Image 1 (cartoon, rainbow, N blue to C red):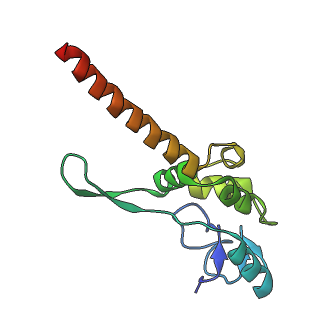
Image 2 (image 1 turned 90 degrees about the vertical axis):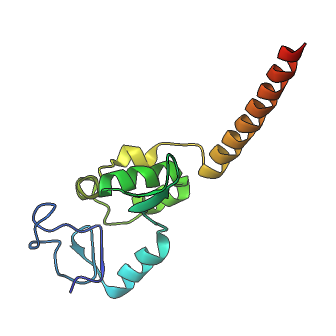
Length: 141
């Protein structure tokens, strides 16, 4: 079983054999102790959504491939979450890119935090609503 692996690949993306397949306590295809493994697991905060209910034009279940799911995660992630991946001592950009489609540079981008982004969007929507109300009122004059 390969229950204790973080960012590991077999021979090729879909091959079920090789360096990153069916081994325990591995990070980026490198052997680590159980304690090292637990330390890394405790230090990263990653939740990838592979599916999402979409309520636009009806309701349907959107299924994302891994690269789409990781791009979505990147948009919503905090700098701390991205940094936690970069801080993994065994970090290997080639393996990370093959699994996620993201580069080290993608993780290093200093994006506005998701919380601040949501707050700005909310404020913009509020201002737009006010502007629309004023436009309706002006047209009545």
